[in-house]
Image 1 (cartoon, rainbow, N blue to C red):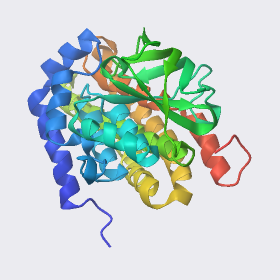
Image 2: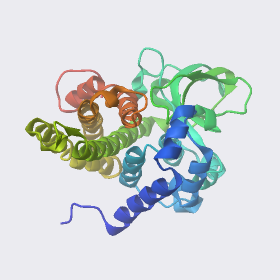
Image 3: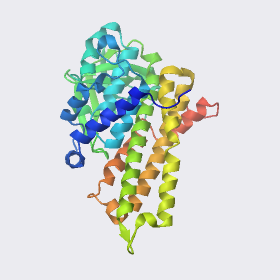
Image 4: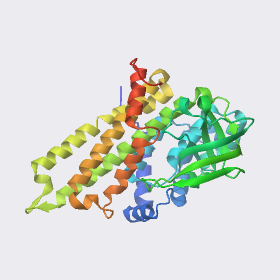
Length: 364
């Protein structure tokens, strides 16, 4: 049995990697990071043209009908390149409509999401670090809703929001409708913009099968964030290896010092084994529903923490320059910090994993 990637999956990653290298080299990335506006429309259009916007959407609605694992593979490369595009929220919103929407909702939205003509995102967070479906309190009534959803990713570029509601509900909200507003929030990760979504008696269209899909959607989101952090951490590790190979101290490259070698070796051996954890979690969302919650929680908690530790080692081994705004290290470090906290910090997901394993803890 082959536990590696298929040729098509490797080609998918190489295609996205080549696109990022050509369309967003470090000078362009730094320009966008400095601007701090989040997603770039030109880059997103380019990705949509090669099929990324509809990767996991049904073929009958213009998608490629791939799986959450394929979305995670794309997310890994986007983390590696720190590409400022609204992929994460758009992918989850598309899955929400595909999994929980009515035929009419799917026919209305999925073809436009697949082409990227409509950009969508998810609004799950609420005050008090409430990210999980059983913690959502927004209560739509008669097709209207009033409330605030916090830390909505790439909200400024989104046309459509999939909003988390009470009892694990999901509903569609259009940005152009009356009563829909955005309050920008400063994000540590300047490649992904954030805003609070403010609803004042705004129209919302419930997804009828949300009860069976919201937890699965959360698990898919955890897998995508873990993949993004994994890709960003490996990028930082490679940057650090290159730096210590050329930076000299006492006439000797830093890479020749035993202490430096140990730190890099430890980071690599801590990070690489988590690849299997990531692949399994993404695969489980589609194929192993009884194991998906536990696997996704483990991947989100463990990989994002390993990624943060890798980033810290990278900063330290870059020396004084690593702590400055002028260093590019910060771009990937801050992206990893976003991945760690979004949809819940590691301790939240360790509690979820413990609950799935039969230990006492919060709800799963």
